[in-house]
Length: 456
Image (cartoon, rainbow, N blue to C red; front, side, top):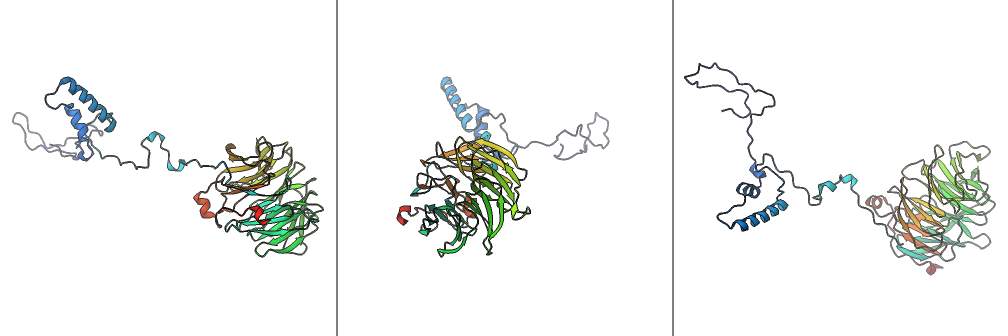
């Protein structure tokens, strides 16, 4: 007998009617020939199935008809529970590992874990609706901002109100005199302690909200109202109805350090990129400009990097993409209605989407590739888009007038909107993923906020 795994056999006894055999080796005929035995693996065998297949289900003398019906029923039961599609009774390898309970038994529908992601629930209504009495219904102003210290600022005619979202406390920051008001723009500085307030008389006030103290008033920047503001470190950039854009260094006495000239009508949108290298400005002249802070100025006047003329209405809505540094989204007014995407390195328009209504504001999600737009006539809705496909994920309604102002919480989850219907609404539109919760440096918005009427 040949030993399993051996490659040679010795003859120890020779029959008498054959000539003696010399000691020789028996070689395999082919390298593919397998001389090992297959030994059944009992631990992997199904004995109920094997018994049925070998006996046919016969047990003694039974009624042939009843026996046949019983065997058929038994066969169907086994087919369901024991997988009767098999043909082998003996098993020669170990059982496969038992799948986890959390994995579907329908393997055709199972996808790799990195591809499986539950669809996020997007509430269709606002979490809270607050009064914003006498808010100015003016497309060109910027009256709402949410600072990094988790405090919301909103301007109602001549007064700026603050709401601390962590504690729920409400306060009045400042009420300006009627001869210099109304307030036309508000913008928090980095750090969330200082806030700039643009006024109808062309001045800009700088406030410390922790002490409710006026730190400084910037004069001489503009000839008319200051409708747009944005910060770049210690530089506060102001945009006026006179079409001028001015960089003001708040550390020095002579604060005007640079002027950008390109718009011939009111500047209603200003946004610095995250790097602080590029500034986007939109105006009532339908123009969008990209300015590069590294470009040399001549006589304190800097030429634009790109002059973009594709919009056919005022450009107020501007938003720099958080995951692609040179990507800018812009939105046009009532006769344009488009969201356009720009490569600000080359100045090329990457895509244009007709939204069907006036685009008032734009916000990117900080943890998903999504863009939120707020609109005016005729539905006054918020629209959540998937980027870059620009498929609509949700449309949120509730405001009864155009949604002019929109801002985002520091943790990126909640959005606050204010509209001409004199309401301020909070929306949980971007969800509350774990990554956003861990990255947040401030507490999430608790409820309820103090009612606006309670602090008037």
